[in-house]
Image 1 (cartoon, helix red, strand yellow):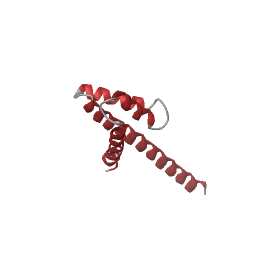
Image 2 (cartoon, rainbow, N blue to C red):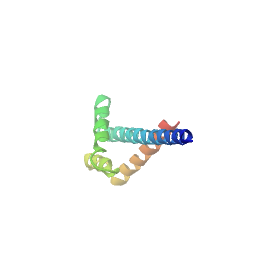
Image 3 (cartoon, helix red, strand yellow):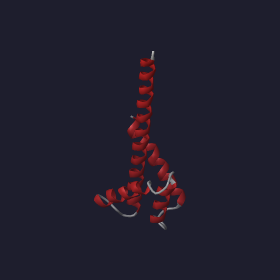
Image 4 (cartoon, helix red, strand yellow):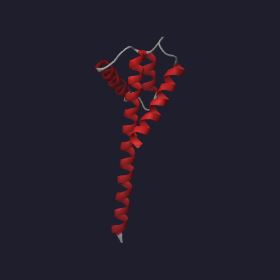
Length: 103
């Protein structure tokens, strides 16, 4: 009798782990796409743009939530993009990351 419950629990645990891994991958992809967008606004291309995108990804580990990433890019793009533009680019990156990884 315990075996089916154990199998069900294992299945639920596996589903939870998969969901969390996908959420992490989507967030990392979003931050990379957002960083590449910001890099273009900063005039960075190629390896320099990729390096900047990695810095944006790392900024996400500063505090819970998304404001650390948005704040990083807002600070770097001061005078080059409005807050509304930055937030819109962030949202577009989130949609695109989800599309890319959920397909």
